[in-house]
Amino acid sequence: MKRWIATTCVSLLLFSQVTACQGENGGDGGGDALTFILLFVFFPELFGEKKKGSCGASGDATAGTGTETTKDGLFDAIANLQFDGPAKEAWFDMPWGPEKHTYHEKNGKAWLAADMVMPLDRIIPAPPQGVASTVGEVRTDRRWPNKQVTWCDNSGHANRDRATFLQAIAEWEAKTSFRFTENCVDANRIRLVGNDEACWSYVGMIGGVQDLNLHTVCGKGPGIHEIGHALGLHHEQNRSDRDDFVDLNFNNMTQTGKDNFAKATSAVDKGAYDFNSIMHYGSYYFAVDSSQPVMTKKDGSIITPNRAGLSECDIEGIAALYAN
Image: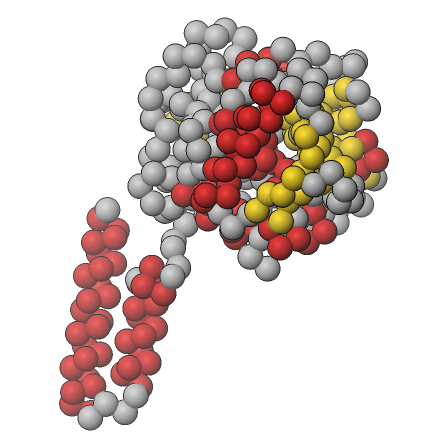
């Protein structure tokens, strides 16, 4: 706050000096240009720009405070997953570039971070040592063209999974420019399945038919979360800057939890770190001792996972990923 006040005072002082000079010199246009530059530097919000760290009162790093009294449906489903064999490590061709992951195999798929799934054929050789992996935005071939998403219901549980998925779609359509069309013919489409193997989704548009599963305990919030993965979003707590905002107790994490909290070094962080993101985990996810948190804010307070709907940062973040 002190820094903001100081910046405001300096900018106002400079602004008054520029105005005075314009009055004395008759205004040759140079003062106008300097005034514009000063306003852009110190008040970017006037030009549609927001400094990192702000997405509005309901979507910034101060949100999500509270006491997590019960596990939400997303974690309940993840906690019950049983994988086919021990964990492995490999490089994957992720939507944002090559990235190393600890993963488990299950039903012919690679499971990353418990609810993020990738095809096994997306395992790639490790980048040459000393050569930086490709780091950038979600690639255009992994985005849904024109923000149009085709989906098909193959759940077999019309009154349960379909209703949940439709509620999640409604949230995305109400707050973003993405549009979802039910179509079982298009080559690239989401196939809603309901095989009671947790809440999970492929990450980004894979190409062809890609499954998205909603467990019986998955509600609207987890559905919104999984669609976020399908559009190309990672988990919020896996951001490269997360250590500036949260403390992790790895001693209280299950091994699966440790794999889940690995930083996404190749993904691009967009905007402010957002505790209120639909993509953020709660404080007790993957805890060995469920009475103790595995993740807290820097002040030690508990993070209550938002499963109500998209935050402002979610909305701005996905718009930025699909901007070009």
